[in-house]
Image (cartoon, rainbow, N blue to C red; front, side, top):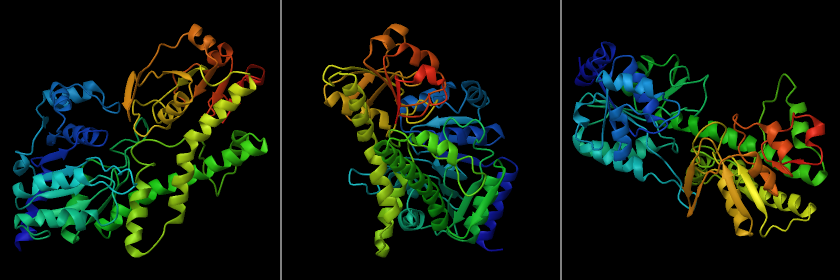
Length: 443
C-alpha cells in the first residue's frame, strides 16, 4: 500500500467512526449551517471565524444566521462538538478543512480572491499529511488548482500523495425551508482520483446525495453556470417588464399566464434589481475567466447590464407615479417596504432596494424604510434605521414602494391605507381589483 493509499484509508476510517475533526473556515451563511450539520451527527468541529464577535456568539450558542436555530446551535456547543476560534493555530488538528469565505468582485467586476488566498496561506505552513481540503466558495473555473494548489504545495507536501484537495460548491438558499444543507444535492470535483474519493466519502456522511464530477474545475463551473442561468433568465423578465411598461401591458399578467404552460418553461419574475451573494456577482467570474480563452460571454454581459438598470428603472417609474399625482419628487415622502435582497431574510448584501433608496434621496425625496428583518443597514456610505410600520405612517406618505415582498406585510391593509403604491415585486397583483384600481402601479 502506498503512502497516499494509507493516508486515504486512515482518513476514511476516521470519517466513518466520527473521530475525524472537521474544520470550517468562515462561519457565515454557508459555513455555520454546515458546521452545525456535521456536529449534529457526531463530528467534532472547529470553526475558524476571524470576526471576534461572531466567534464569541458561536461559543455562547447564539445564532446570527436565520437558517440555524439558536437552540440547535446551543445544543452542539454545549456538547463540546463545536467551538469557534479566531485564528489558525489548530489547523494541524483538523482532518478535513472546509473553506467557505467570501469571493466578492472589485469595482471593475473582476474576481477578488483575497480571502481565499489569505486563508490558503494560513493553512499551508500548518498542513500535514492525510488532510482533506475542500473549497466551497463560489469562484471561477481553475481557482482550486491554479490559485490554491501552488500555495498549499509550498508546504513541501504533494497533492494526491500527502493531502487531498477538492472543490465542492455551496448551494445554500437562505430562508429556504424545504432544501437545507442535508437534502440539497452536493457536487464534488477533485484535483485527482484520490482527492475525489476522499471528498465524496466525506460529504456522503451527512448529505443525502453527492454527485462526483471529473475535476475541481468542472465543479467550479457547475456553480457559476447555475447562478448564470438564473441571472440570464431574471434579466430576460426584467427586460420584458421594461418593454411591457412601454407597451402599456401588465408584465405580471403576461408571465402568470405564460407559466401555466406545463412544459418547456419555468417561472422567473422581474423586480427592482438583483441582490445577494450570488446572482449579481458570480456570473462575472465566468465572464472574466472566459477572456483568458479569447472568448466573450455575451449573454452574461448583457444580463448584468439589464439587471443593473433595474434600480434606475424603478426610481424612474416612482417619479412617474408621483408626477401623475402632481407631487414633485423634491420633498416627496416615500416609504420603502423591504430592503433585504429577497423575501423573509435579513440579508441586504447587494440589495437593489438600497440603490432605489439612494436614487430617490439623490433627487430630493424624503425616504424612510420599514423591514421587519433588517432593523438597520449601512451600505456604501448610506446608513438608515427601519421605522415602525403604522397606519398613520402609511397614510401620510406620498408613495409606498414595495421593494421586497416579505410575508409579514399585510398588503391588503397597506393598499387600503396608502395614497398610492408602486409594487416592484408583484406582491399585490392578486388583491381585489376594486382595492388596487387607481392606487397600485405594478413595476
